Length: 156
Length: 156
DNA sequence: CCTCCTTGTAATTATTTTCCTTACAAGGGA
DNA sequence: TCCCTTGTAAGGAAAATAATTACAAGGAGG
Image (cartoon, rainbow over all chains, first blue to last red; front, top):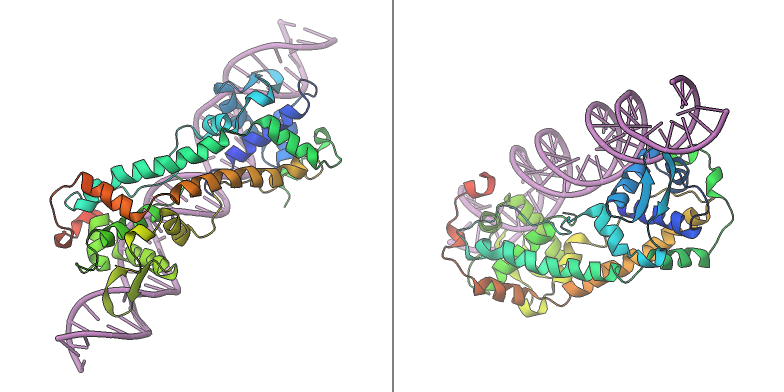
């Protein structure tokens, strides 16, 4: 459990928007019911997605909609939208500069860790929201998200 | 900053052990001086590395040494030793099962996120401690780790 | 114009992780 | 036996994450 669940929530939001393009009205309350979190969390995530140009929202106007087709939204775009430029690996901050290892370990680790993170991000770049939606449809279950009970968000 | 710096510390430890195989005596205090952390942290990390079969330590006997050559220790081995089977990505725990998206999102996310994590781990599997040590030597600086002042760990 | 609904965002609190430190038992070597 | 080490539990500080409250900003419809 390292990458904040904000990323998973963002993918969930985009999946909701991508399942029925332009059809249903997706408010933060409605989506919060499907995700199981507080509506404010959804609004914070949609705000990040909006600043990244992935969705369109407007203050005062109910609903969130995709800014482009699901096939053109890669999970990497979503990741960067909600995680910004966060480093995946932490490096200890105070190695001893008087030691040959300590003096150079940070630069070396940043390089090696950066390569690993790039590999992860490259994989995220190969999957789109459209593929996620297709995967969700492959194992569908009945129910409508718009008729959720509020308790769904707080109940355990 | 998601993966705990424990991983970076573990790589640092193994780099120290790998720079001068079998030569110097590497106690937890001495390594803690190079890393800039409390010796207990080092002992906890070496304990995990020992249980993973990467180093040899013995209660009562000073020093830690590698259990196999640096070229045969991949960063992936180190990662697994200190992070165990931790999931890199968090998934929101309470999606609404009554919604088609909410009912299937967890399985889908676990698959997609798992692929991304695998890509990252695969990259870690391509780098060895020997390579890290070689990289450290490419930009050496004077100094000896064994003569460190204790303040190095707490000072800023 | 006014009311009602929404979104946007700041601020607070709670919960969980991570990190640092103290303390001490366990154990080998001189 | 003494002195050093490692191993580990336990406490607490600090940071990150999550959940919630509160309210300003703003469009839609009457």
